[in-house]
Length: 172
Image (spheres, rainbow, N blue to C red):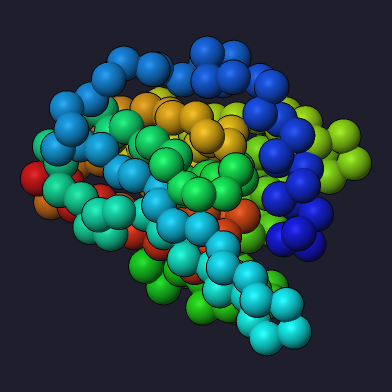
């Protein structure tokens, strides 16, 4: 399923960030998360994927805008999807990634056409503050979102397409 989702979401790159209805205002560099890494492939031996969010833990003020920039070596779509800490994926199966299916469905990602019906999912009020909030990022693009969680809250997130890409936003 992850492979099909990657292909489906990659086809949506033509949407562009402005079509997402997401703020493209530039946040201060201190409020920036960067997607880094890539895939190393050695035929007959291994595939190593080093895609990751950096920094892994970001501290921001409530109300701050966070910018996510894709500087990965591989062109692939990503999401920043909030979950409870206990729901962070530990693998690829539905038991190891219980939120992967529901978040994919929430974005209405069509695996056949590659279209993403809902690029920005707000599970609660507008802004990033509760599990279920999720934003889609086309390959080689950047996105921004406002952190509206209360001071003292820790937001845990991961990429639905690359479940090992995980991070935390500490709201101060």
